[in-house]
Length: 418
Image (cartoon, rainbow, N blue to C red; front, side, top):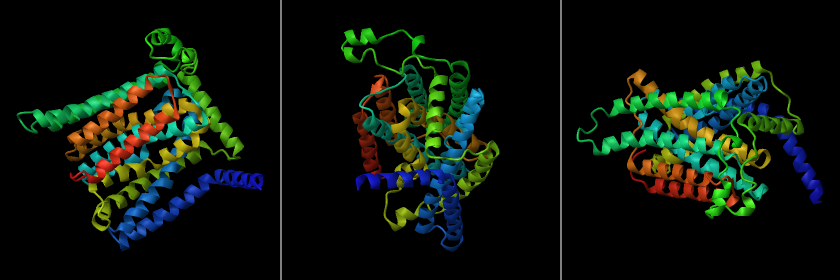
């Protein structure tokens, strides 16, 4: 009986996987049409808010699928740099469309809050989910420590860029004089740093591996910071960045073969991106029109809606992908996904929103209140502390998830308007 049920579940999973793209397209058209109708018939209503949030999920999944497929094709043809640029621009397209739409509508506070929440969600919830579900499948997960360290260090740069304008606002005797200029200058620096990140990981150091750093494991054992039984198993051997990406590609392609997915052409993927991006913009408009409805109708805290609800919706596809793929494709993919998303948000999406607002004459800066800066700082410091071990357990995933839930509880009662 159990064998029969398992076989049926497997067949159903394969059937859904085979038609996942047509299903996503159908759901996107359905909810986008419904959201458009509600926009004109029940403007700024709670129904419009919920339908707009649901619309973002299948549409962003289409963008993710097309981007991933194009990146794999470029990397298999040795166009690493172009693949990195494409992944950098479209990797967080849902957040990018929402934030730029909010800035264009002069909703700068909503844009800032959503980006802060998205960054915290990516550091804690997405990364924690990856570690938890990957740890259930694997008792102990090892990863390339030098790659993880560089990614984690880039997050510290983003924290510094946000902390400086906030400290400037808090302690400057001149008040907010020059504050916007500081934020815009910081945004330019971060965009240059993001370009350096792409150039480093996808051009100059694609062959970076563990053999290029001194072996510190014996020292760690002597100091009692690493058990001797683990000293020979930390990291992923001497696999380079390029080899790790190739292994992830093979895992994805193997899953697609097992699930009998049909490959799509480059033109089909480009067409999906061209159609899904405007759909995300319009869904963001509908969401922004009704963003205050949950607070007015359900009495939800506006801070909770801005810092937790909207970022979680925008990152829904990341959460689902973390659950489905962390068990199959290993922790190297986890590091790439969780940190890649955080880095794109902090070094690309946030500063681009500031520059975009500058061009439109909208005052948006990289300025957060003390609560947000402290929570973001604790999240990044926590990630940096864990990632320097070289291995992880599922328990560490629960630590990050619990930290995010503590943040969500605090945001629920936080009095400031988001």
